Length: 98
Image (cartoon, rainbow, N blue to C red):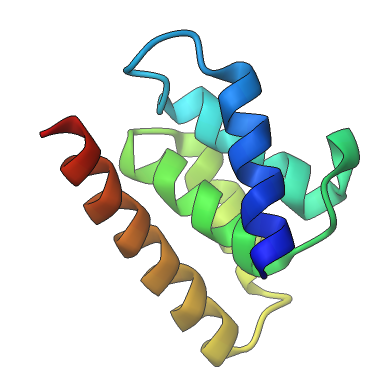
């Protein structure tokens, strides 16, 4: 999991245009990268669900649809972990912004 976090951080840093970088589209793109293994990212459905969840929380209908689609391939425990990680990411983002 540490490697996937480092990979995600690198990807986010490389795509971050400004302090408000956490747009729905960028979160969705990370979800796609993790769900398909594109851009050198490992396939990780927990990470993908987390990023689709974050995209959905920012109003992305595509994020909502993809989150539901990959949830069908995940266990309840994996979904709970993805949701926990999304909540933690939101909390950490709010602290950085403060």
